[in-house]
Length: 325
Image 1 (cartoon, rainbow, N blue to C red):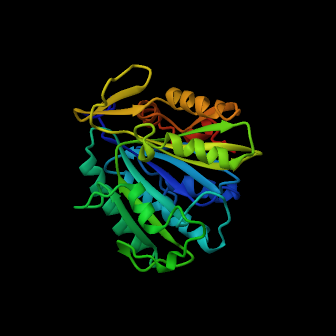
Image 2 (cartoon, helix red, strand yellow):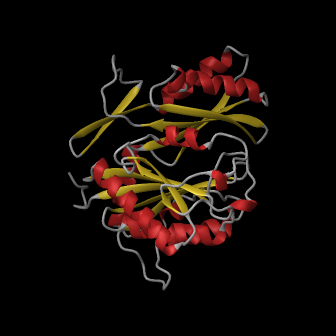
Image 3 (cartoon, one colour):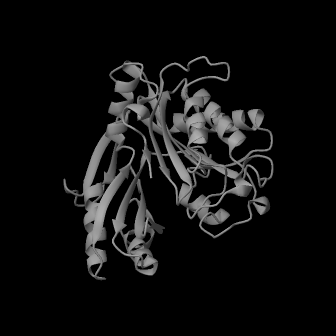
């Protein structure tokens, strides 16, 4: 089923390895909206810009129709590759590329398989427009293996400190260079970013809390978590994945559901994540000081995309005063 606008909508939460040069972030965001000759891309909006100085990483929420999203994302990435030199990058957040991640998520009227095809099309366009860039595939773009982003990142060494990208193999494009690095591109059900702050500078305790809530370690379903120092405290940064299969013992306060193209998806609620982190931190004598949702829930992203596109608000992030942290 398409959106209320009668359009098939897709989101890209573009992760770029830059946050300290706001002019560059502005250029990358505007490139999603306008061609190089200044022509406006139709049915496209940048809903949110989140930047973290310590991470030196920004996340841009780009939404558009399934027909247009590829052109808008390619335009934004070309600008990013132009103004970011990955070999000069400094920041505490792991990354492999100047454009580190291009995830494509369905919002309405689009299947995951179609999003995978869109992602592969973007990858092929990028190696044409940016000779020398390199990409690895994940999720519904990684046919037929369908390997998850987390698995691909682990196998490539994304989680290691200062990995040498020039020794890695790409799926699309040339062997990675120091300037562009290696970019992940793929499609999956929507992934939220939910960060809980601990009132401590004890990174060891923060890492223990993050490990305890990870699904891979038997923690919360669909949650991947890392601990980072941030503004004199420790932040538990969570990727919250949506999933198709129905969890056992569904409770309204734990899981949230939504549907796209007659497929039902679930994700664990940010409130439950906050409660679990609070409990684990309290056992260590540490209190939590707040929780931030970076961008939107899947439902909020769809509703906001419909609103912004229907009213022609392409720079929506300026209306909501995009977050620079």
